[in-house]
Image (cartoon, rainbow, N blue to C red; front, side):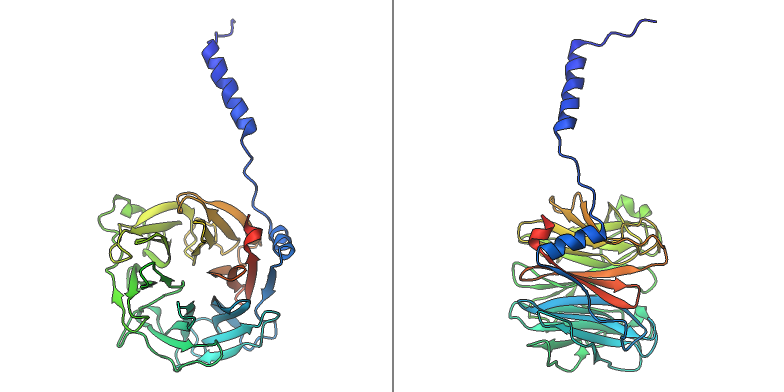
Length: 369
């Protein structure tokens, strides 16, 4: 049987495509935890546990971090017998530039569980600690404390008087907008899961709550299976243009956008990023790159391993994985609830390590090239 003729134009097109494919740079595979750890150390960074195995609590979770001054860090988390137990309080440790100090319990307002601390440094350098207290998540309340140096702290007080359900940051850090306003990513879990943003224009003294993010008018609502989406993480791409990614029960990360500094928001939209219904965090660098740390598992309540660091150069439209920070094939392993902040030398990442410790990466910017 004769072969069908191929036109000369078709041959040219095929050859051109082949040459293009051969000349295009290959997409680098994500680095393994060992490879990335070596790269970070070679660049002058470090990988630590915030505290050792001789911790004063059986379990810990939901870490947060902030840089108080160049090279000096704080990390906080909740710790006790186990999540939801009445002895759970808020713990804190200091990194002095060389080593982590001994964990100390910083806050225990009452005999109910404490949850989800969030550290935040404002434009004046003052450090704030937000956290939740309450027996049940749907009815918890937000408290906050302040410190000039990370060592002496104010007494805890309610963020919003008579709050039930949570105001201010629910898990991820607030951001300071170009107009100076504080924007806190928040959500509630009373029945359906709903997310919103709290805005303060007076350095946290008063807060204005947006309506819940809209998922009723969006044609993709049917894809938001389960209870919904919570725990936003925020960035501002240009003055007034604010964006959020959210954890969800639908196997994907979801997104909303604002054109007016977080006062009103677009309907919630599905992204292509997988999500296991566990926490995520985003950090925007000065050159516009976005960093994302998350568990790339597209199953509701799926495994919390691996935990990956990814980068976007197009405001979150597409993402490339830089490295697996942890990658244990055992589905019972847990590396979760990451926090990521800018530091003088690069970025700082903390996350839950097997519910027993807090892992901390101090990553110079050169290691992210």
